[in-house]
Image (cartoon, rainbow, N blue to C red; front, top):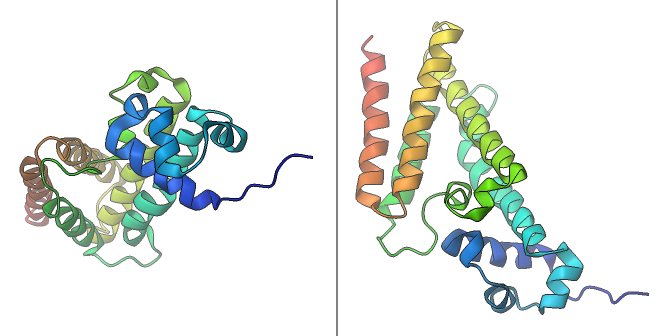
Length: 196
């Protein structure tokens, strides 16, 4: 009979998530993961199968605990017309707290696309699904704001906004000021659409 795990899986996954978020998949070494999680390498392998298995668990935690709560107001039934403005304001507040040396900035998923793991088909599918989920949420927010817009125009506007949001998340790692300027451009775009 195997040993019973003596750790709280959620806490381990969150610690690994924060390390991957800070350093990326490639730069998060197994010794770093051992220090961050408090687990020995053998325990990491026993619980998650591999460093990659721990990364997959960290990505799922990121989606469930960071991404989905941030877009929940956009996809909620009966979302108000200002839900999309509230989302962009929240993103701006998050970016306002960053410094150029912030450890966990930008998006864990987008940051992972710069390393060797980006060539992994499963990771590519997860990142693409994340982008589609974000686009769908922004589209829902746009539909609440512009209920009379036809579906094709809603789709095109959602693509525009998701591009700006992804750009802001990407810039957050190197230039939080420009990331905030990109969010401001998204808000200005909404203002322009309001006038049409």
